[in-house]
Image (cartoon, rainbow, N blue to C red; front, side, top):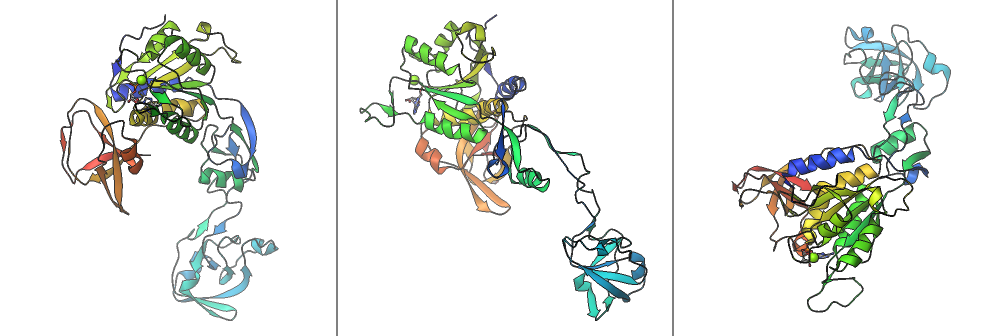
Length: 422
Ligand code: AMP
Ligand code: MG
């Protein structure tokens, strides 16, 4: 049964949970193979396993002397130096058994010989030709990473669905994966609506506004792992709007901006209802972005050339540019991430000290453009001075949003406050 667009306004947390529940049902896109060097930011479509123990030998973490810790019971101790082991040494010195009273000079990253159970840092030693005097005791295992301590051969190192960052790429490199299977970027349709909106190449009449939302969304979609597909601007006219929405629904996900408020020409919900859309919410108690809409259109309602017969999810994001950016980040992003095959991730905020008092009316959870400053552990945050959710200029100067809970009226300066980075 299609749910009508009768208003369902949820708290922010509930709206987010609804999105997360639907995101969890999304199946990942097709996979493709890419070179490791260009895999950063992509989403793994395979699990990555350890091809051997890591480290593959007991590894010295210091330059110094490999010793038997029993030999250092009495200090200073003088030991016979029977050799030297460099990192990468392939000679059978590695197999040398160190007998009591013996040691080898060893470098960081080299294989610790059998018999030795610790490495004494070179700083605590004095070398006399083929003998060395040691002035510090050690505990067994000190400065050695045992073979296989980081990972056993065959164990899973990276899960399918991981977004590849530098550490994940380093790990893949360390097990010899010169190519990786990653998911193809899903196609995310972007439809800006509004009679006053003109293309950025046009000369706007005095009361016309250039389309900036399609461009901010394209950046956010790319960052979230999708491929933005910009549709032409839709006039506030039902037939043309419907045709463009139908086109957008052929992509993997559709993001619309504008036309979801209560105005006479806010036609997006009306047209979606005609398409027998199912609405999961038609508003969230947030500022900016309250009129945000989330739903899906069944495959049966549309003539589709999509390979599968899956329904297509859509968001109607409010048209005010900052509302569009904020609602994408808070609510649309998990769907883009899921559509691109990523494992789910909870939204977490950081905290900073508030520089100057904030007073607001309670009732909505607010995400207000702000400037995070300070240095090292002394992070401070201050609201940007803005003219409301249409103010792109103030938002471009901001570098984060402060998160104000719905029950707050006054937050004094010096308080810790939640911050969402962007
Ligand atoms: P709406 O959500 O359609 O009521 O639009 C709210 C405000 O956002 C209006 O001032 C619009 O002019 C503005 N707006 C809507 N769409 C865009 C867009 N694509 N780019 C820039 N501003 C927009
Ligand atoms: Mg409009």
